[in-house]
Image (cartoon, rainbow, N blue to C red; front, side, top):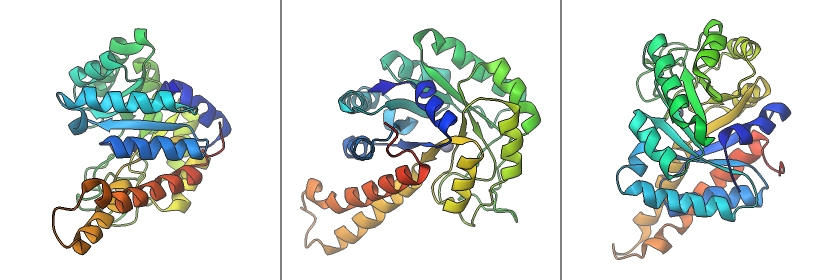
Length: 286
Ligand SMILES: [Zn+2]
């Protein structure tokens, strides 16, 4: 069943587990996420990254996600991940997404508030949830400092959380506590005391970007200390791409049928999804 982000995170927040958000690009990824979540009786968030829903792609992507969400007996949220512009948000809202994130985290604080508030005002009347980011989760591929944080990271300042939530009216808040997007060049070290101060500052559901590759003991700690949505993309595509490379190396010619060629890559991706859902504690919740 199709639900909003606010709905899907309220139970997770109360019962201290995390819902997995998986960025999906095509039909088989949509099926992999929703079918594995259904088999594990887990709520799940299907997310689109902007390059996958540009132009005419949006209608195709949404039709697949909507069909999967409606077929599923377990809760599914359809979320736009890392939008850059209000226009991208409005297109997603108009077609039926139940949640959006505009990422203004690289902007100065006041501008981040203004742009996040603008999104809330644009979609609130349609019961669409809004996620914003305070602090900035950088890219793991961009060199890393002594602490393991990436060069363009800016950690969330706990003192600003209550004001940010109040002034923007957002439903979920992505925080920067030491994770990075993409592939880590060095193991991250999450700042759990900082997360505790953020949790104490507001009741808003907290989101961890850069979940891929984050050591499981640290992820477990983050979930125990208040994170209730974890975003995964890189681990899915690394599993898929690596397996596809091995498959391609074995085919005798390049006329191999795509549906057959991708069987093992899809299975590898599904294994990552199952492992994450179980690890987040969201299996057997519905
Ligand atoms: Zn992210």
